[in-house]
Image (cartoon, rainbow, N blue to C red; front, side, top):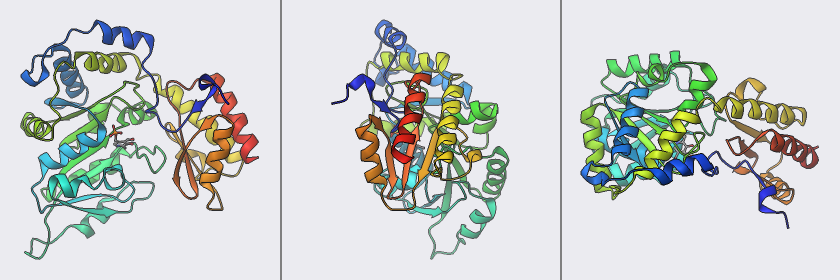
Length: 345
Ligand SMILES: Cc1ncc(COP(=O)(O)O)c(C=O)c1O
């Protein structure tokens, strides 16, 4: 039986544990009742993220899923249509929430590496005839998880936003890993957020906090989202220690995402040598590596990795995902590369 500390977990960047320093910050946090708006650190975190993304206001949400769902609920009316990408988190992994929680229908379009083009959206837009649901919102994902952490080109986002504005469509960004895009490209987070009416940023992915996302947008939008957060049962009380973790992550764990990207690139190189990298190296742009196999045996390969102490995610019967993160250092990188060679060589 492998000792727990020897297991290397690359299933997701959500598996990280708060460091001793982060725990100290959480322990020392002053707290207040956030439903009364009296948790000072939470107010600070919400304002910090709103400022960082150039928006008027922010709201702490327990999860990225809830944050996306609150954005959809706050931007739409039942019966509206939401245009999204076929492999997006919102369409695949949020339990059908848009239908249940917002009464909207999703219209998924297949992007290349998760990237949509304005022409595709133009073809999709419904006429204002009574037969049709009315398109009201476009959601994009940056970086794109299922596409393998691909960065959305800013020029493409801006073209889509231009089209959206012309046709009175709102724009929401699932920016669960937006800071990975920022670190990979050097583009200012405000520039990435500017074309969107709302952005959801996760603190609990690469940034390494134990919980939380912050949804940002105009003051009016956040006011609506705040009401729906309460209605969905997400009003929280003494959350200062969670805010302290988020503030610590933003102050100390953003720049280091570059290390995750370097290690993912090294894993991708090994996979390329082994003939199982899904795409060429240029598509491993951040902290996610996707492996593809000729046969439908991803689950068997996952089990072999597990026997060797390497945990990975099966994303389809022929694909496996590896995600680097702050609890995965250079020593573990060396071991992980050896394990890949042993199992796949
Ligand atoms: C792109 C993207 N959006 C949203 C989420 C949802 O985040 P959570 O697990 O906090 O609900 C994830 C989770 O991995 C994600 O990858």
